[in-house]
Image 1: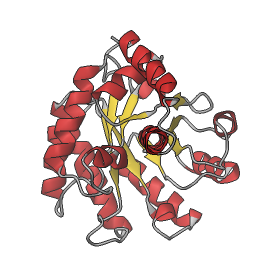
Image 2: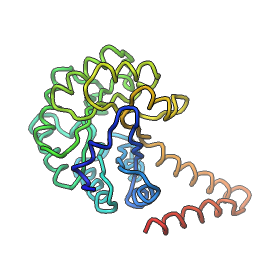
Image 3: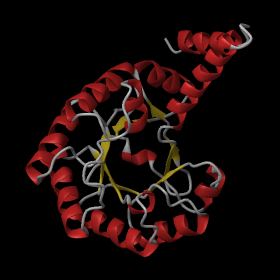
Image 4: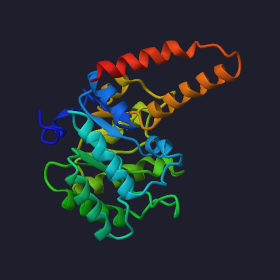
Length: 263
């Protein structure tokens, strides 16, 4: 299938696309080989590979990273493009023109102003930026608009729904509010909008079948796979420093075989 043309068709309410987040070309190849139909990048996971916290990566770095993942796999890739990497709509437009040119099947835009300002944008300004991104990326690029308030200290579902409704009118193809996890809240969001709804799978939250029943059309994992990998490295290092044994090599062999099988 075309990497871009059929990406949106994979989003079906009640039968969600499971879209894990890769953090480098190797993890992308591994995940694609396991049978996932599409992949996403992860801003926090990629930043961790550079030794930085989330939100501290440049547009140029993110686009180069996205291009590397697109080249590594034969499935659609959607990129976490944070807030569009620009203070003006002209800068946002340039980000999404460049993103579409990498061969990405899609990308996200969020209404968070970034770590320097640490605020959620006013609704009108955020919707204007969504419209600018949609127009610049063009047809065939699946734009996901994110309402960030739930993970930025503003846990108001009515505001989330109003934002997602505005973003759909501004041209978003998929709607996403990370932090909305309760089944009843997901169902309310799904019923309030006319676009596929993406959900972030979180510890202690509903399972994939429960989110599917609520109408989710896509489920992702954020940076959790990347940090699970780092957790495995930490445990291996602690074993080496502590007992000096090699129990970690069993997991290492499993990983090496999986990557060989990924081609």
